[in-house]
Amino acid sequence: MKDLYQIPTKLNVTIIIICTVLYFFLLQVGSNTPEIGMKLLLGLAFGILMIPVYSLMHEAAHKTLHPNQNLNLFLGQFLSTLFGVSYHFFRHCHLKHHKKNRTDEEMWDLYYEHQNRWVRYGNLYLMMVGFGYFSLWLSIVIFAISPNMIRSKIFKHHKEMRGFVEGLDNSFKMKFFQIESIIIIVFQVFSLWLIGWDFMTWIIFYIIHGFIWSSQNYVNHAFSPRDIINGAHNLTIPKWLNIIYLNFNIHLAHHQNPQIPWIHLPKYIKSNKGRFSFFKNYVRLWHGPLLTKEPSPKPSTNKD
Image 1: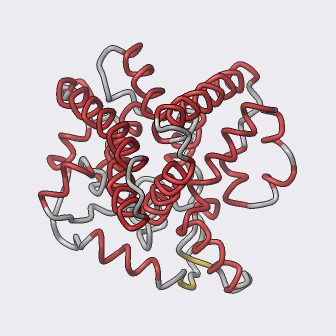
Image 2: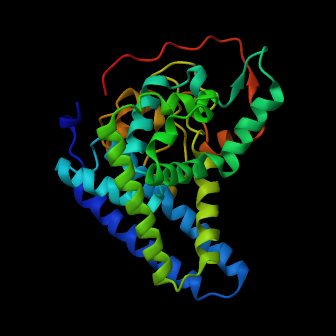
Image 3: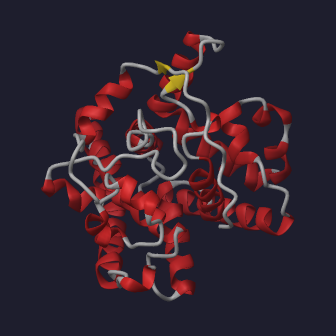
């Protein structure tokens, strides 16, 4: 199906170049800014910059970032290095997401009567304030030092985390995780060296980035039908914001057609009926999880 529409190669590469230049520019300006208020504003810009970085990283995971698959892999790994996650680990988790979407293992916005309501609230809010992102940094450290630690019982105890850890028994795959994690650490040390070891700026930027990504990461799925494929929304955003989100808000169309490049997704919106604002759902998610009696859908058995 992806052959029906061309990958916007030149546009994707142009956006990657712009994001890379702005990444180093913002870090440099931030490190030369003594005022904490200005650092926070620059950190906000940094966090917004990481939205298209993630969107294109996501394209690479579906092999729709670049038609040359060697370059698709390289660019995906490079974007993941900026973002802060092993590319192959991210791809492993994301493809699992397409198989387990809206199952009990990916149910942050709902809870059952037999579950502790306050624990479920805590899970959601911890994820949204940044723990969702900083768990990726934890994975980097674990993969770099001792990849086998990821299989420990502590990660299998948490239902949502267990769903992503499952299947990490391929030693060849784990080697990729380790190499990429080491490269990320070396790259971030290099970035710190470039800005004169200004840890405060680096920490502020990545904390804001972590919050922005974590708080928005589930909005496209929150309160959608409990269905593997149709459990997502085609949310609306102002047109000028699409230069940042790159149609990532058109998420139902993506789940229904995961091999279609981002630029063509509007053609796959079957109806505008029932569409609502991305930011409305964002605010709604902050109100906390809702009680549900809907059963979990069965995970997909389709191959990656």
